[in-house]
Length: 536
Image 1 (spheres, helix red, strand yellow):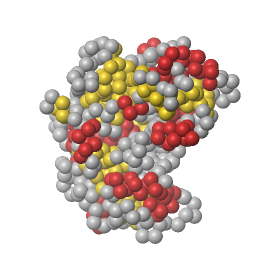
Image 2 (cartoon, one colour):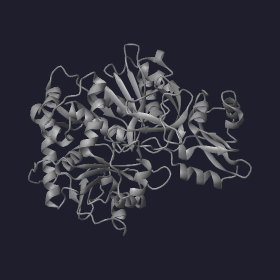
Image 3 (cartoon, helix red, strand yellow):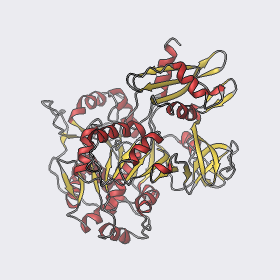
Image 4 (cartoon, one colour):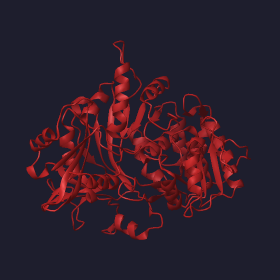
């Protein structure tokens, strides 16, 4: 089926208008109300000269207004561009320049960064700054900003089929890049995630898709994205649930309040969580386990957890399964495309869950020959299904990451895996992060896995640092449980009992915690610079 989200959502709203589409606990929007708010915003955008081909940047934490603004931009054929809400003024200015923003949606609590960023010379002229009043105390509105709820004539244009969506990379090794998705291609790429995960056939027409959403027999998915909407997994899965006529439960907060999240999930009968690995799952589990009672499960309606973006450990998966009859789908994907593989577990008995390649995923050797059917082979992951158009304004990098192989366009972001056979692979790490020590290639993910198998380790990052003798020295930054007496030497010995000697960290740095972005990423460039300046 070839369509766009805006067109389908408009039709779903007409079919199931009284059903709740988005709720944050305090504010709920039915499908009819969501569609009307999007139409009002589309009229507001049009009144300020924003339309087809423009970029609407969304610099906000998760909130209902986020999805309304997204819907409005898609309606107009403007490109929505989610931005990292933790970016400071200088970083925000770079992001606005990267996506060529002409409009910006943001909460008043982030007004200082918006004001400072807008004054920088590299930022394009913003025709509209749309400000959400998020009860930021006595903070005044930004001069010239337009209130998010400003009245405007509702506008429902014919929705173009060539709309785009811009998704920025994590920027862990430099300035983030904007990946350009055709909305129609993204819609096609997400059809398995939308329908297949529920055991439903993919509808062949727009009319059939509307029928699925309005059918009383379709499972009512109540999704709770606990990773930020700027994270593709959280955003795309929420968009997919709106296509099904389901409900998106939004924890409207700039940071994860685990106790509030559990209360909201319980009150709204959430059936699905979207998370980003252990960084999100661990505090949620601690809140659940603290609230657990012998009378029954805390979250009886939760039946699925979807994770992507960072490692979800087997220990955490086992604790998630202990919540009830929960299926965990741990995806290996990237901003540039995929998914490449998924590890699915239906209970703790399925652990450790192995990554299985998706249809369309391949493993390529150095000559770009496919080796996914050769057990023991090591290669980089590729994907040849529905793909983004490339990086905005960067044809050179686009050609490098999206090569044409055997006459077919692929995406090859650089993740190394080892082929296990029967469609299974083991993740070794991103090529740019592979450590070359004494001529041996060491994959950080493998060493991190060994470290995380220690019961006192809560997080770990492995990278290579310059070394006169070895070229690069394997270096581990490790977070331990509070009060742990484990030493760096203990951890090195622990790795040595599991891996070859040359893979053992030559340096272990102990920290209370490892700073990660809302998507679970570590700024490796900043960490490498910090560690290089510190005494060994």
